[in-house]
Image (cartoon, rainbow, N blue to C red; front, top):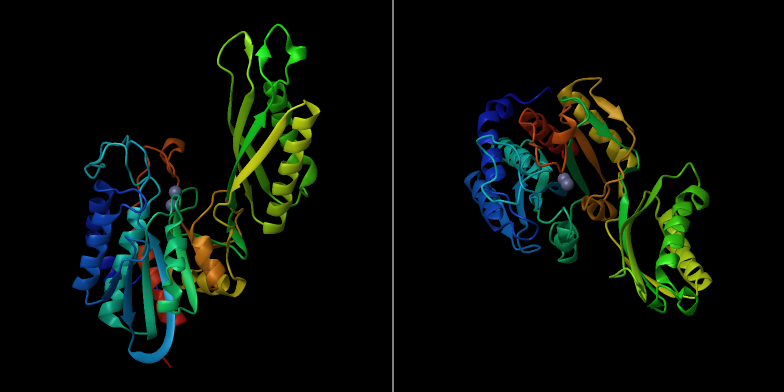
Length: 390
Ligand SMILES: [Zn+2]
Ligand SMILES: [Zn+2]
């Protein structure tokens, strides 16, 4: 079962869809035109369509030849990023400052390509649920769909995701047993001191000195507190205080991002940062508070599902195409919530080796159209294997 012929023959059309979506990008929760495009295509293919989850989410349901109650979910993301596209190709974004710099245009086109094939052939049991989610790049559109009862209405037994992956050869996939992507939380620290004259520092409680000590101190959270065999990141990304040369200000703020794969490690990091913030501020006669915004959890594959995804990919793309357990990414992914709710696997589809200035989230990035038939065939094969007819 190599690349599906019928899907290969539809490559040009998938490319047209992809280029249309690329030229008309929309930000998270604003994918109105994209959702309309997806829903129209699904209806054209004779697929039952449900709209309204998370506002712009679209769900298609294809029932197979076998009529058991079994059901699996395949997910694509539809949103673009607030980036000004630098390329000059024909399908360049028509919207200044918004572009598909993560390939969600390609993900949507691949799932549509698979949808048409599956609707025409229906060589599977039960039903496949196609989930086109909004707002993956922040906003957690997938989580909103779940919170609105996506899996109550469509009780899938497993859920599957895919992302194009620059840095991995075209025709290869990367699949993880366990975590593929990290959890990402952000924090805001506010340090309150006592302002005063720059010439009389002894009469102040200088929040800038406390902030400086804290920035240094927080570097030791990962290097001294976390087991070196567990990956984690603490990055301070903003630091604000003061307004002129001769005044010691009364407050300073720091912001940053924390990444980890293991939620226990995540809890430890949160606690350590909170303690350190408190203690370091006290040491400088200041008071401080750390506020957290909890982001996407780790994207963690079910091991059995990862093996089945690997077998499917090997069948479609050839033996040797699967790279098991490449180093996971410290980036985060909204699909994590679906994988917490149902077993399944999220795979990386090799996108080749674009130049360093044309990879994900870069103004020069463009989805590699060679992947369209590969990804769509993987979806079709996965459905036929997971929901095999007796
Ligand atoms: Zn992205
Ligand atoms: Zn993405």
